Amino acid sequence: MSPHRIMVIDDESIVGKMLKAVLEQEGYEVEPFLSAAPALARLKEEKFDVVITDLKMKGIDGMEVLHTVKKESADTKVIMITAFASLDSAVEALRGKVDDFFPKPVKIKDLKACIERLLGA
Amino acid sequence: MKIVHKINLANISVIILIALTGFFAFQNINLVLTKLRFTEIADDLNTSFLEMRLSEKNFFLYGDTSALSEIGSKIDESMTTLESVGPDIIKAIGRENLGELKACLGRYRIEVETLKGKGAQGVEMQAGLRETGQQLREFSDRISRLERIKVNSIISRSKRQLFSSLCFILITAIGLRYMTFFNILRSLKQIKNVVASISQGDFRAIETEIPRDELGTVMTAINAMSMELENREEQIIQSKKLASLGILTAGVAHELGNPLNNISMIAQTYMEVYENLSKEDRIDFMVKIEEETQRIKHIVDNLLDFSRPKKSRNTVADLNGVVLRSFKLVQNMIHVCNVEARLDLAEDLPAVLIDEGQIVEVLINLMTNSLQASSPGARLTVTTSCLPENEFLRITLEDTGKGIPQELLDHVFDPFFTTKGNSGTGLGLFVSYGIVKNHQGTLKVSSKEGVGTCFTIELPVYNPNIKEEA
Image (cartoon, rainbow over all chains, first blue to last red; front, side, top):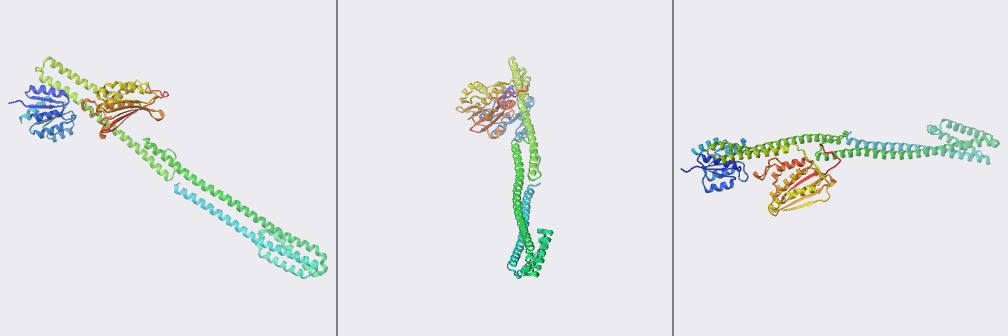
């Protein structure tokens, strides 16, 4: 069975690098992106099982990523992360049928558990 | 007193004065008429006496006794006339004179009667009769003369009264109008001045004594409005401060959130993948943590820079020199962006007292922003000028860049506001604004999307008489 593919979109390069290091050790295949536009282009070429995206980004933001992904590939799971830990954005994100939501700073253990749960379901 | 009452009072006063003057004039005319009537009677008496003397003369010349009878009937006529005008004549010539006149007439009658009895022998009595006749003539003459003098004096008195009343009415009318309108105009002027001050944001009240008229009511209303506006202005400022604080806090939270998350992720990852990391990788992880820590420090430093009043090193400087220096520092960027930059510096500008380093920082900040917003071939014009009255110098930076949308224009000086994504801290304009404000100057922006943006800095001219606070 080929490994699950995970895409990470965050304009902070460290987020992508660190998640790649951790999640590849778990056996996932990880592709980090610094902005949404090339990430969405890549999604058209290949199917990803999980998309982890930052909410607030210049240009295309996390909400738009969520809607595009869900429209084009309904079974791809989307996990939202953001530095805005306010209730408003969480509610809004969840209402848009995001699969899970993590405020920064992200607990990597929780994130890993969440990915396992989403892929197992 | 209310204005309408004042005007009514003025009008009523003038009307009363005119009525009084008319009344006195009427009285005087009546008096003159009475006197004239009396003068006519006096003239009649005079004529009667004259005729008596003529008859008297006829008697002595021709010895005609019928002349004496004529005198008798004339005396009776005169007595009847005197009785008929009784009280009037007493008023005119006095009781004593009337008595004397009557006595004189009586004497004349007796003499005429005596003469009648004696016939032609009475010639020796001629002198006595003539004398009494003469007295009668003089008496009636005197009465006529006296009455004429009185009429004349009444007419001159009326003339004087009319003239002085006219003057008095005129002066009163003008005075009352002037006082009323002077007060109204003065109040209106005060209202105008205070309203002008209020519109300039100086919420003061009308401090002079408030009149008790309609304008006083308006003044009281304006004072109340001024106070209310001042209160509201304070509330608005307060809420703006709170809003700024909110923006600042949210901005700080978000700005710090990213590097904190990075540090946290690096540390968690380090622990997760520790076994598989080479020595170089581990060092690389630590370097990244250090970098993110520096990033946080930079944000905190910037914030402190703004909030803590910096010890400024103010010197008397030539503003054109400072602009020129800043301009040179961005030459390379101007070249790279391929922007047509131009300086238009006014000559003979007065000096300014500034921290040159800080103003250069502001200018570089503004020019960099303009250059980043401009496409190749765009223009950037930096102008210096002296404002009228020589109190402020102005620097304008006008570009033909993409402009700032109207809805964002209000936020460009907010902390952490940026249109440059992660390449901008959102603190440049915020800090620049603070610097210019610390120099007692102003920094303003106007912009039209697609046309360009203009930043205007105004700094006070150096005044050697004002000592800088240490």
